[in-house]
Image (cartoon, rainbow, N blue to C red):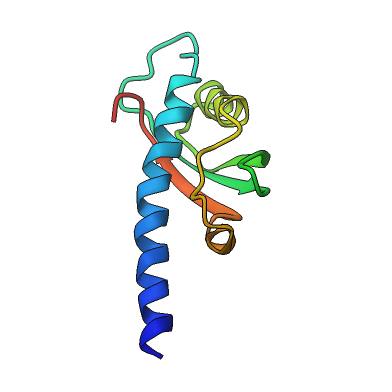
Length: 105
């Protein structure tokens, strides 16, 4: 039982760490849409396959600005392959993940 709990804690730490790396890579691939984006943010759900390729990227909490939301979805797809842990046993924790996107965060 303790080994299972330890694995769960390791997985949660890896997800937190790699989610931040993924967000950073998406931001590097993001092209700011025209207009004022001050204060805009969104939450993106990403579905991945082993190797980090994106099979789906969808804004699940909109910024309220469709151009901004679409630009983040495009950047997420363009950023593939996304960084993942080397341990294949960890992939199930990354098959579907969500991250918060705010430019400059």
